[in-house]
Length: 386
Image 1 (cartoon, rainbow, N blue to C red):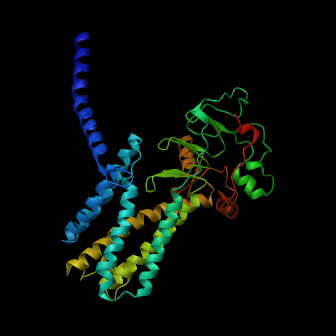
Image 2 (cartoon, one colour):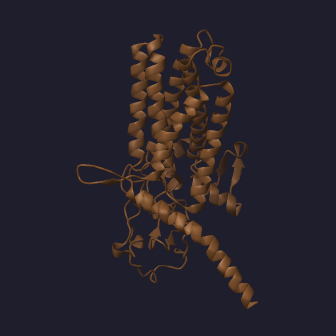
Image 3 (tube, one colour):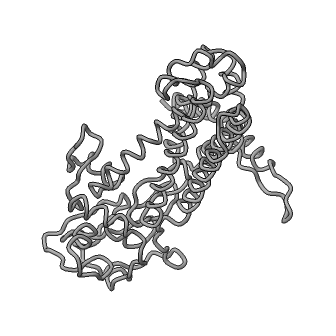
């Protein structure tokens, strides 16, 4: 048995050796990639490079023939989803998706100006309108990239003593589950006691706070710990890879605004392009049947970019739909996921939304609560201070 154990250990070390060496080589290369700057050499994140290099190559390759376009445009979403699950499993933050999104916008706009506008079928006012939509979307995206509502970390990251806290109101959990106490609580969130809609939608009676063992702090209701950011966020919805940040109380509105501007701008750009390269056909017909799309390389490239935009727009449209439904039922992605795990939620609308029933106080109250997020900084009550 001892020989078998030693043999297994040696085999594991041999198998682990090449992977560790490859990881060390990759880290060394990533550290050496730097760009000269005024304040000194700036390190370049390796995850930024693949979209910048591969996206134009794949799109130009797809424009060569219809079958190549079919293969490339069906392979790209598969590769992106595979990389997403890979990074999600490793619990790694990456700039790949943010780089892919921003570069896709820039490249689609470049192709539109170079291949579509010179044909003379797009008016100057339409170009200005498309550009304004792009700028508004980038402005909302920039706002969504800011603080999502991180809870302040205790000074020195010291573990405060919570022995004085009632056992019913604090749980030693890092998963962010909210318990429900037997006694009803009469205190409203942020010290407010006015308005049934805001009080009920924000923190129902009996909702307890819980203790985060990683951040060493007491989390208010609906706050959660993000394992990728390593911080607790107020009213955590989810960690979005497309902005490389969490979506929480402070940036949820900007996130929805960025998605909405993207949808409007993308659909408008697709419409203008199809009306140019497929004259006399409606948008849906031209998207599926455009006889002259591959008559010349310029039209083929424009048509390929239209399909790429359509695929991305469909994905983002699904995300926006789920977000709007969750807002209407006043439930976050995190709460829906936990409700499914604990079998405490109801599947509605064919499973598109999970109603926990905990914060849902009607459509108008739910949207009023969402529009008031981040309006005023939350006040800390006496039981928040540890």
